[in-house]
Image 1 (cartoon, rainbow, N blue to C red):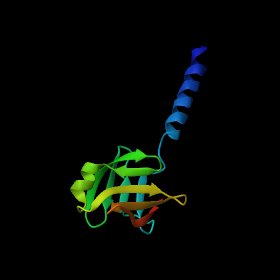
Image 2: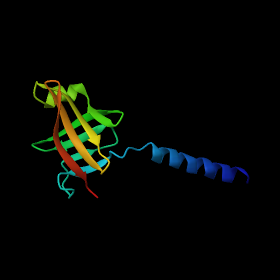
Image 3: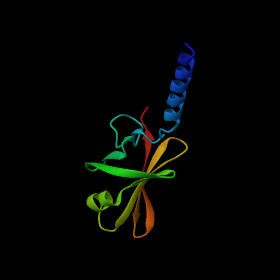
Amino acid sequence: MKKSPKIGLVFILLIIISACGKSKFYGEYSVDGNPRYDIKILDNNTAKINLESMITVEYEKNGDRLEVIQDDVYSYYVDSVTGVFFELKDDDTLSYNIVKNSEEMKIGEFKYIE
């Protein structure tokens, strides 16, 4: 009988901890914030980018950035692009950036689709 409250408390703590570990990045983004996403960030370390064509890339979280892994950068982008990353801004917009010739360049800003 005394184990029930303890089990319930442990269960609630696990839910809170798992919710805190989730990233705000996950979800769908478009230029105007309306459906049909241009970028979809998934929680399995992949992102779908649907701009000129649909590609799926893997990323690694590095601080406030999601950085596309180098194998995917080399596979999907032109030779002078050496890095690709996403940054979440305070207003829930997602910045899509590349590193080209050692310079960071913004490709675009995308709004979260509600």
